[in-house]
Amino acid sequence: MAIIEFRNVDFYWGKDKILEDISFKVNESEIFALLGPSGCGKSTMLRLISGLSRPSSGKVLIYGQDASVYKGRDRCVATVWQSKALFPHLSVRANIEFGLRVKRINRSDIRKKGEKIAEALRLENKLDRSIFQLSGGEQQRVALARALIIEPKILLLDEPFTGLDQTLKLQLQADLRELQADYGCTYILVSHLSEDVFSLAMRIAVIQNKKILQVGDPNTLYHSPKSTFVAKFVGKKNLIPSIVRNIERNGREVIVSSTNGRGNWKARNLLNLELNENDEVVYVIGADSIELDHSGDCILEARFRAQAIEGRRKIYYFSLDKGCEVRVETCTIDSNVLYQFERAGTVKLYWKSENAFLLKE
Image (cartoon, rainbow, N blue to C red; front, side):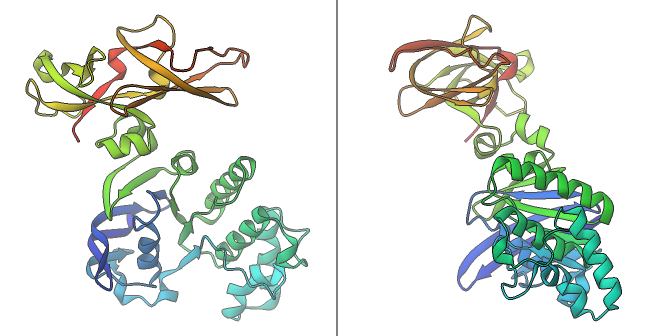
């Protein structure tokens, strides 16, 4: 069952169009992410769900009804904003209990619920501290506890991992998974970083320039992007401008040549694009599908630019003509394995054609 649905929603701020023809559904008890660059309209969607804004046209449905029939407090929605919006004059305990105090429920129940969620978020020893005595990660957990203590059906998370190091991010993601199981609410997560949502979200809507480009699970978005933006932004794919030379197997396989004359390669036509010889296309190959040794039926010569090390991952950057670049990622248990190339030296890259596919701009 869809707990939230956007139907052809437009939103204007004055004369500026912020959202255009937005349509998607969020299922009950789902972790759903809105992913896109800054300024694409993600946070505006949260405001529409929470009742802080109304659509200029189209409909936002909550629990199957037009959201306009609900007052904000009746939507059973809680929000953790990027700014955290904690009360600086209140203790950790008072911040967490604030939502229940507003509802004026029994004080002993407030205390029990506050201590329960504080323990779940490892804050039980910090309840009497000032907000200023907490780290950024601890403040984020206080904001999360304050939102969850009222037992919302829908929890909105606006860039919840901003300012956290990798260890704290992973801890908070684990907390969110466990708390969802305990409280049974639906999460809608906003982020501009794919790595922050891929390990947590069940489905993701990718947004660019006020529009949703694609909705799917992380595996689909990574391996089968439908646009060059999704391929680059989500999948970290290499995009090589190319020209169709030959079409085989009833259009399912295509031979292309790069526009800069660097080679001829085969690729799959995953999206069943209508192609003709000499059509301009984009050849897509993942950074983790390219090898630096003799493996694969496709070969490309490129100039080495730079390299980086991120844990077990080794990242190499190569350049082609006309500003086109190729990124290669390798991962090995032996952290001492590192290819050495001369700067601006020519290097051969290899991959299997079955791992490549085509897109149109």
